[in-house]
Length: 230
Image 1 (cartoon, rainbow, N blue to C red):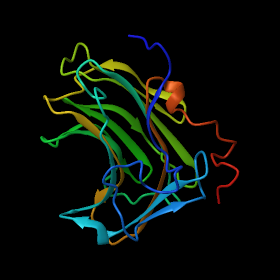
Image 2: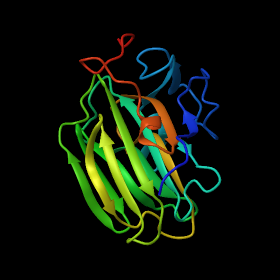
Image 3: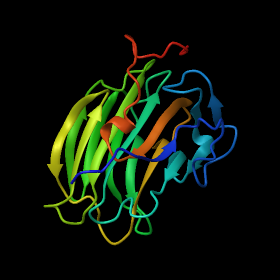
C-alpha cells in the first residue's frame, strides 16, 4: 500500500481568512477568524461556545469535512491531521474534539473525547478504547493530532494508527473502520454536554493527505506556542 507521491487532498487551515474551505460552515458571533494564536500560516479559527449553541442536550458548533471521491471508500488509505489550542482547560463534562461519523446512518466510527485535560480515543466498530491520554490536553499551548486510517468494513483489512504531539500513541491496529455502505466524514469543533460555562477552542491546520509528513505541522518551539501566540 504505497503512494506514488505525497499529496495534500484537502486543506481546512483558514488561510483564506474565511471559512470557505468548509462546506456548510457554521456562522455567527461564536465563530471568528483570528491571527493569534495560530498553529501555522496567518490564520486560525476561534470558537466561543456556550449553551447559546444548544441542540437538545448538547452544545454544538462544528465544522464538517466530507472527503471527496474515494476519500473514505472501502480500501482507501488516508491521513488526517488537525491542531487545537485551549486558552483554559475544558470543564469535566464530556467534549469531543475530532471524530469520524457515517453519513445517513449517523453513527461514530472513531472519536477523541475529552473531560478536563484527559483525552480518550476510541474506535467504534465495535467499541474499543485505544488510548487514554491522561492530563494530555493542557491549556495554553497547541496540540497536534494525526490519524492514519485504511477504510474498510473488514476488521482484518481496516486499520488505524494515531499520533499526538508528534508521538505515536496508538500503534497500527486492525479494526473495521466503516460500519456500512455509507461514507465517513470528519467533524471538529465545539461539542459537549450542554452547560452555562463559556469555553473557547481554537482550531487550525486541518488537512487530509496521503502521508504523515503532509498532515504534520512545523515543529513548535519549547513551550508549545508559535512566536505570535499570546
